[in-house]
Image (cartoon, rainbow, N blue to C red):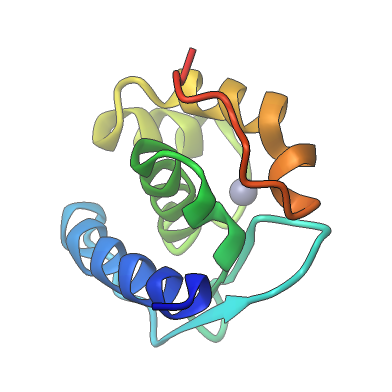
Length: 119
Ligand SMILES: [Zn+2]
C-alpha cells in the first residue's frame, strides 16, 4: 500500500474518532501534499486541511494535529480558550506540540527516519 493511500486511511479514521470528542464535524477533510505546513482549518467553510506527511509521525502526533485543527471549528484562533479546550481532549498535547516542532523539518522534507520517542 502506498504511503499516501495509507495516510488517507489513517487521517479519515482519526478525524472520525476526534470529531465526536471535539463535538465538531468538518464538512470536508482535504489531504494535502505540501512542504510548508501541517494543517489548516476554515471555520467559515468548515474545511480541515491535513498534510499527509503527518502520518509519518507517531500516532499521538497525528491525533494532536487533528484535534488542533478540529478545535479551530470551535475557536478559530490560538486564544487561551483554544488551548484550554485542546487540553480537555488531549491533556498531554504540549508534549506532542514540542515533538512536532523539533521534528517537523525532517518530516516535511520527506525523510521518514525520525525519533521514535515522543519526548
Ligand atoms: Zn492552529
